Length: 135
Image (cartoon, rainbow, N blue to C red; front, side, top):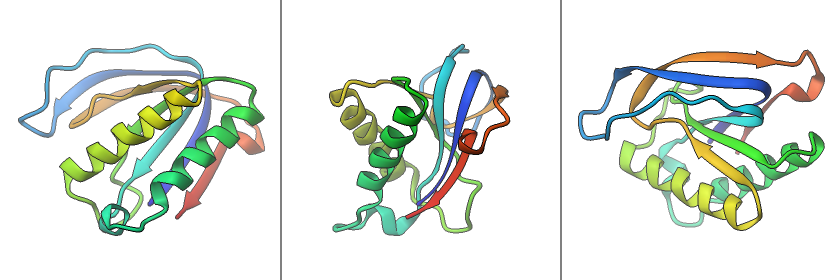
């Protein structure tokens, strides 16, 4: 798994192109003061015994604590590596991650899965505003 975390003053999207035919219709969203995790799930992350999901949860919580916020956006982003997990497994991993973060008291949103989105990002110029992790 590869994750690019951003701390964003604003992170908004508008669905542009539907990439998977079997996903529901999506709507635009506006988000303020949030951690955004651009998550690239690899096939090995779906194997039994992988710790990638737990590391994703722990790193998202760590960065949210650094910024003293409780809002996190999970964004499926299959552009950080060459090997990509199959869509159903990656989606399930993101759903489990969302549930784990919510049970820890975070407000979690996911970008519409299976879409290319027009993104509107406003982020601080700070060392912890962009953090890359590979698990």
